[in-house]
Image 1 (cartoon, rainbow, N blue to C red):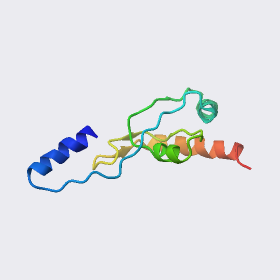
Image 2: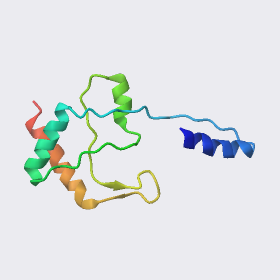
Image 3: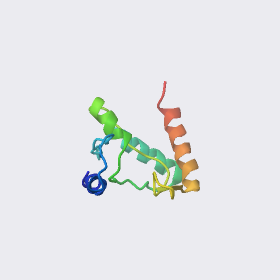
Length: 112
C-alpha cells in the first residue's frame, strides 16, 4: 500500500482527490496442503519432472476466498505469465496446454 500512497500523494499535491479502494487481502500458502501434494504428484506423473513450487507477492483470488472460507485447502497454479495486468502482459504459450492437461487429469480422477 506504500506505493499507492506515494502515487496518491503526487496527485494530491496537484489538487486531485484520491481514494484507495479494491485491495486484495493477503494469503499464506500452506506448504503441507493435501491439494498441493496431489497436484505435485500429478505433474510429476504427467511430465516426468518436479513442478516449480513457489510463493509470490501478488494479489490472488485465494486471499479473497480464504477470508470467506478460512478452512479451504487451496493452491494457485497456472501457466507462466510475464508483466501481468500491464500493456506488456505475455503468457508463455507452451505452458498453457501443460496446465490445462494437468487440470483435466486432476478433475478426471477426483470428481464424482
